[in-house]
Length: 131
Image: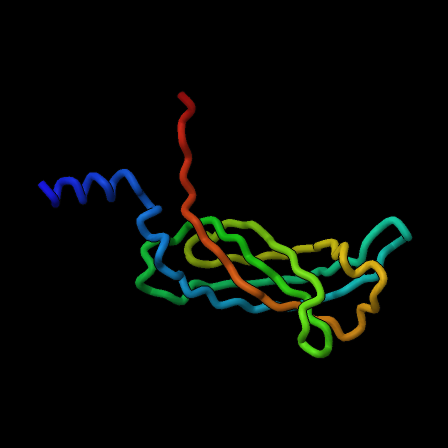
């Protein structure tokens, strides 16, 4: 009886039953380019490329959604801005090429800034049919 209920619960949860596991993602950032605002109504931007690879070989899923938090750091390693990127990991890898506006850096020098990955959250992709 208990085994049947457990199987039924696992089936109902689907991929969500893996939510406590960490895919142990390894990130590499390249081609970081900070640009000043084009005019007084726009904001500075950062262009970058990011590659990630899943390093947990025991992680059961290869395809899932991910929300990546990035930090913009000043020379003293203090976070001065942050943003997130949402994407899909397929077969345990992801390559991004992004350009993001940095609204909070409007009146600040961009010299010496660098980008780093702050954190990430993953979640299964699951579709539901409307009733």
